[in-house]
Length: 78
Image 1 (cartoon, rainbow, N blue to C red):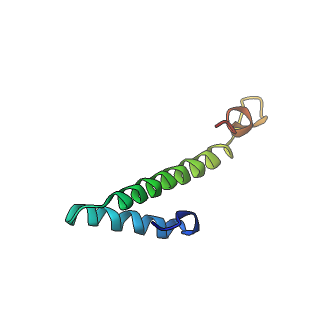
Image 2 (cartoon, rainbow, N blue to C red):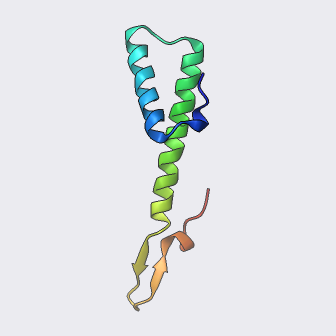
Image 3 (cartoon, helix red, strand yellow):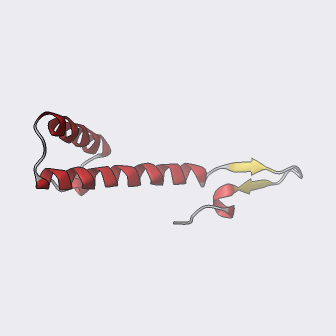
């Protein structure tokens, strides 16, 4: 199993896809299944963090003209 922490996101996605195609053609052994799960988990966490970062940087203008950062009001929670 590869050390997934050293892979770029593009490499992780390529490996996820390669493992998926292999699973459809010939199946995966237990080590490959574990690698696939770890890669999927890392990918999902990356997407969540990116979305959280975007949502935490949204500013809205209130009716009274003040600017309110939604990340400071609601975000930065895990």
